[in-house]
Length: 77
Image (cartoon, rainbow, N blue to C red):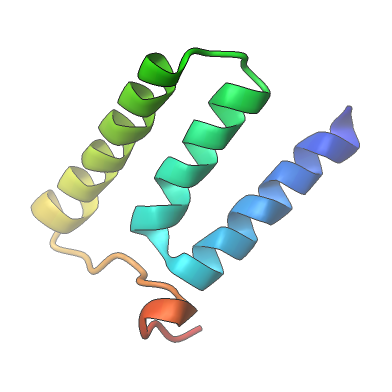
């Protein structure tokens, strides 16, 4: 069970590096809620969207920080 949890974090890290924060967060939340949490599509989509919006609002809106865009979208490591 712990190996699976670590693999999920490795997947999230790879997504974050490749596609950036604004795509990795909702994808990770959506997939993990559907596959690991057995939640419905509406609940999973709502939580993924709300979490992504909250992260954007806090970091980009309030703190004026640029969110990492990912290697596929021009980001640097």
